[in-house]
Length: 262
Length: 358
Image 1: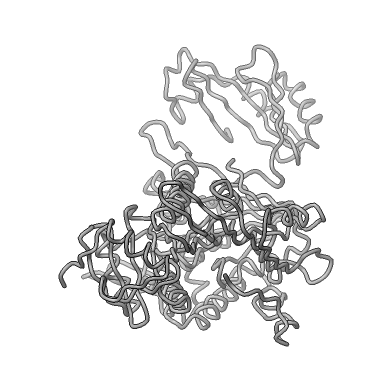
Image 2: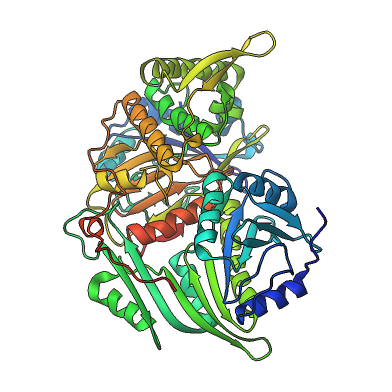
């Protein structure tokens, strides 16, 4: 199974990428990458150009600390593939003349690379709740009274539309289970699933409490309460920091810094 | 109700007179007071239809009266204490002119912005305010930095900094503060300029980072040209963020998906020393950020958050590192969210915070 396929239409190049989180190279797998052709890629996932004249370029990606061992493993497999090496501060592509990719060495922002795919079919309940609960809160803050699971999922999973029927069914089922458990345990007075439609054959999430309808001070407390409940549902302890917005000692005494408005 | 006999030439004449100290009682359904004109820039992403329908909805929710004018892009809103003249030439970015008492205006517009998920202030970042300096002679500047919510109580230089200086070349003090180690606390909150135009006249113009302007002098047109240019630059920046960086997955038959858009990075010079306090303050659900999230620490130095902008009811993703934030706005997100976040981080965490579009 290839981790990622990128294509360059000009020149007809398919880049088949194997991402290594560790340093061990599976020799058999590496030989498989070496033997792979564009016909294989076209057969399994499709290509936007004629596979017969296209070129397949294998690529391995790894972390900086694993670079030497990965390179060694590839050598043992007889695969001379370009290597994408990811460090804390730089990312470099090690490539040679004749490879279908050009070498680079770039400074990158701190932290892991940007993450675009939040959940997929193998995500666990908590990963679903990570995106579904905020989407529910967004629904509440828009003042909406109910939302369908499909609407929630299509907003929380940006690539929802490209999933097939079976994959959607699987995602929907897992998302529903995760929400049902969270509603029962943490949001009993805030959300519930409810049958709807003329035949009561459709289901929506009903919003039971809407902080947005409270006065401004009550609103903030209402949102903060939902935040605490979501923390519990996600298995995180709430912050021990004092509530922001409290006046400083000087301001309590009427000695805050003030300058008349112009 | 019949349209009020107001068009742009008459508006210019009435508000020029007001700036020169001469009020008018009967020209519009509310009194125009002499003494200065205030203008507020609002972002109105209305689902209610055109300018008139949106104004009527706002009037209903804020208990104001409303009337159309002879110019379809000018609408009036008023209450017992004063009125607002809405210039909706750009249907999304409004200029709201008023001569009413400031307390009433603040309360009225504050209520409208609080209640309406699609009305927000235009949040001018430090760079945007700084760019206004070239348009006149600077008379004063104001720095008002409030770090209490996001910064630790100890070990911080300039946790609260408030300075206002009037006189020639006031920006020199700003430079002194920055060079003395207070750059992260020297937020540019407001400034005042003298604008002179040989043909139009002369005005004293004050601009505040929350998209508000105050003007005295002898030419409303000169004031209008100043605020219109500032608003135009702001609108262009918001639209550029939405059009260029809104992340979307586009399905192409037979080709899978194309990812468009990109990540916006907000970088700090002042590293986050107390991550827990920073997150607690940022996601407190309070004004001005109005962000809800249950952040997920990945490491000591890296936190992910699926944030909800409670003001507009939209979710977006954020990564938080010691050196800044990554903001993932979806194609459906409002670009104003970014500028509200950045402008308020500049006033509450690090005045040097800057956005880099990756």
